[in-house]
Amino acid sequence: ALINVLIALALLGGESMNGFAPRYSPGLMEKVAQRRHMEAVPCMVSSPYYGVGTWVYVWSHNKAILRHCRVTDVSAPQDAPRHKRTKRIVELSYELAIEMCGREHLNDRPEQCPVTVLRVDE
Image (cartoon, rainbow, N blue to C red):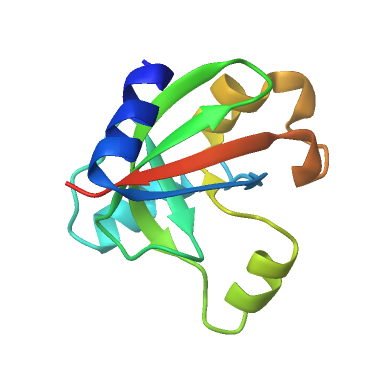
């Protein structure tokens, strides 16, 4: 699946970035989606780079899995520069963090959950 996304990226354009993924508290991403009148989807992230509703692919370096995720929240304006500077390129829902980072890293610093985010022009 990752190879197909990379081919689409090469053919259609878009961007790719490497960084780290902190996580939301349990149930918080679902509450954010509800406040935004958005349906909860299996893969939801927050981003300092992309607007709400943007779909991105997230590749987990720890678990070697790829997920297609909707940006459901964005970094607060005062936090976005710090998130970008520290390479916190997405923030995962709690459940997604377990899947992509591993339960053993839930209380670690974000650097223990390296990810690649790919956005393909569609």
